[in-house]
Image (cartoon, rainbow, N blue to C red):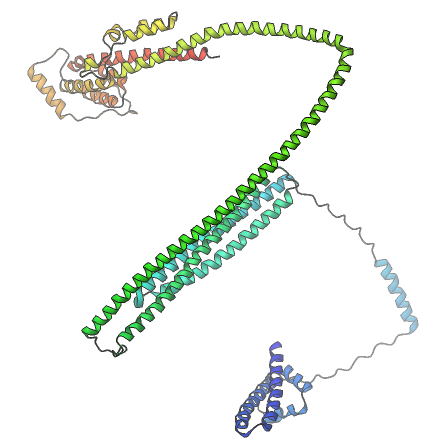
Length: 634
């Protein structure tokens, strides 16, 4: 209907304006009257036609036109009888009304009384109103849960907004790179990629703005929840954490917005750069046309050598001129920057000087006021002390005797308590001296034990041979026994150390491994020779069999009956154990060898056993000294 009334109003205004313009044109000059009449006639025809179309195509508009416009509009019915309307409204027939049944006044009164009685009987009392349920205030746990939920939602939406802005920055960077590539490509530039990149930037920016609005709304909602819950959760660490988190989230959004503004400024610079490049190319083309005005640039004629040389000369001159201008602009910018820096430094120095002077003035004024306050405080304190002294004299002169007696009793009691404490301290100090001596001795023993372990494991470091690298530990054990004089456990352990280790020392671990390689090679060659010996042929046969026998050492988790295992498997397994630094287990396997191989490996096994025994005893001494140190610590 609004469209109908709009068209009707437009047609009416057009008709009125047409009548006015016709009246004006009738009084104007002859030259302009023809054009005006033609224009006004066209407008009149268009307006009349549109009004007629509206009138005949829509019945409500036609009826409204008939009611408001003069009778002249009835000419449309005569002028266009062929136009059919959308709807045909047939006249409604009037239906006769049925006569009401006649009733006597007495019967009507009886009926009214019956209806009133029935209405009184049927009326039921209204049920009592239900009491309104009291609104329960939320508990502290519910308030904490609401704060946590708002905090999680805000963090989630801020994270989504940050990711969206990061995608927008990536899209802007891609657009800048694509634009630069298209500009540098000249006529071969891919401007479709630039358009697609620009569309991606538009979509990404719309998305990140929507995400940012959502995130800020959720932050505001979080602040509202915090404000509502703060009176009930006063001093709760959750409220402080939520406030700090809201501040951090807002700061994060502001930083991302600033970052994306910086990237957009680069995009604007790239667009300006594109305009500058395009204008520079146009100016350079104009210069080339000015250099060769006679050349047909739009045609297909070929350029002569002289013309080409002239263009190259102009290009070189232009390039030199641009370089000089670039250098001059750099010099100007540097001078401007230097002068601006000097001005800024001068301003900052003035500000700092003013601040320094202001601070000095403030400090002087503060010291002056502080001196005045101190003098006043000292005077008041002196007055209070004098008054208090006089009052104390008057009060204590009467109670001096009783006070002295009480103080003497207290003093005597304190002296007795102090004397008992002194006696206890002297006894504790005596015991402490003994414990200190024991603790120092245990620490010295512990250090000596570690030196013993290093001597046994590494021997003499400057030795060239295995025998020279062996280091006797007899002197060290003797000094250790002197340090631990009176300790029976230390004496028993030192007595258990073998005389060989005391006088000759033990092979180092490295020498044990080197000796094992030699023993392994010899024992493998004689692995098939019995213990009673054999002939040369038997030894050669054993060597050949050991050569062609492959190495299959037993794995750690494999169950094996070592009593029925041959010498080759025992040797290979012992070799793998030596590589794993398990010398004692390897020595046990070497003792299980049979025949000539057992005789070859017996000396190595005894060396390993002696080394492990010495290390065990020294470690036992170390544990004993550590235990003594712990026991003597107070």
